[in-house]
Image (cartoon, rainbow, N blue to C red; front, side, top):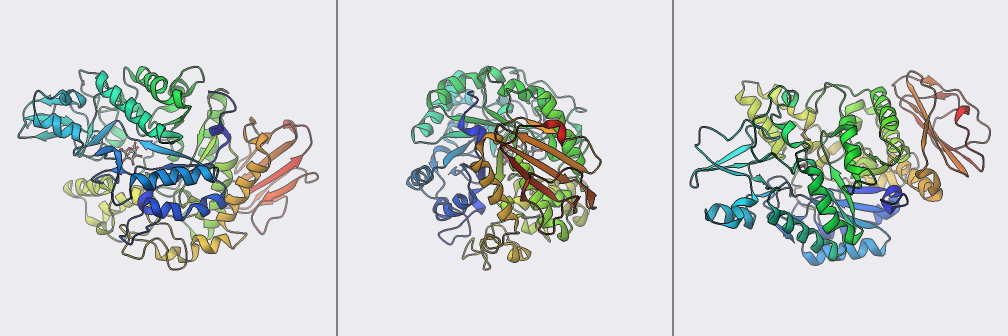
Length: 555
Ligand code: TEU
């Protein structure tokens, strides 16, 4: 992991293909649609695109259930379209990473069909299958999408493990031929020119072969029984090293692990420069406050985020490089979590832009974040599409909750909030048909076209900050120095030899005083009503000072 690796200073942008741009009028986004929107990404200034799954899939979990790793879903386009996307991104100086979903496959994958069809099939060992009786699953593990982590196949008298939906069956990573298939497949994509992968729930791949019962009190907070056995399973590090040595390293490909629940210390083991495992990991501890889970309805306190980041910076170590992100396709919009009042929307959009692009680490923007999108006011369960939301709603109803109570619980955390199609212009612009997931009327005034023309928009803030990174690349990899702690205000600096960037953030909805000298500093970003000496609610001010030695104590 060289200190000057391209991905350390790159800005990544996640495209969720289903909701980005429809080109053929079927209400579903597709690859030609993405190709038609590359100007948006280039004007924003991003360096790399992370594309959520576009592989052939029955779409039980929007493509995270893969039927064929080497084919593209027909509703998203063809392999030619994907080759064109790689070529066109490269032509524009951008890179492409794809989503590698290898903890599980679809129940329609040829391996799984073969495994079920024949007791002597070599593919039986590719999955976690157990013989038994319909009344007793092999252990007490639960699925992340409600209910037991086991599906019963009556004809074959077999149980199959699924940590996610009942149509996503877990692969058996203890079986060497399965690992060899994965290596082959990754190399096949890297040969096509892909620059790396985001590895879906990659820390879950290794399970103890005896599959022992979980301790129900450990997973209790979110009802995830069994998690202690697989969130860092017995051979996790070994499997990652094999994958890296045999597939990623020969191509110099970047590997970014999606690793829920690993925390700081395991994150260091997974990404330490000498470990040969992963380049970056997504940890999720900062997305919800301690003791809270995604489906709780509460206000996220930005003071917690400051504590979290400062603690990570003290403990993560200088050879480990963080991934900085606040949104993805699995979480509600961050602005809504912090403060849903419309009058704070632009300020919070700008604040998240500043944090994402100035904290130490590699930034990942999620589509629509650059427009300051917020949660959608879904009115009924019929409007939701996500398997996690629908399963959860059904379970709460079975448990006796009213429709209103179950809906409220699901809406607090539903992944569909972030999957609403992108509002490109006053007419919507995503599709000419009925979109697969309903769009948002209130976003008519928030569309990309209007924001592109408005220097005070959230989009303009993202553009300005990415431009600042490009203009002065040195500060982007510099250490971070925190100012003295003050209630409600967060200040930090990124000091390089010839430029220092200083960030001041109001963590509250009240005006705050701000001390410090003005001379020699140039303001790059603030609210339009900015006056030095005070911060308006949720205001984030970015200033730079050129050609002066770093002076950490003067903040
Ligand atoms: O997500 C894994 C994941 O851990 C969350 O989506 C999970 O539901 C949550 O952490 C529980 O609190 C990845 C993908 O990003 C997601 O879209 C897929 O549904 C999932 O894996 C299965 O492939």
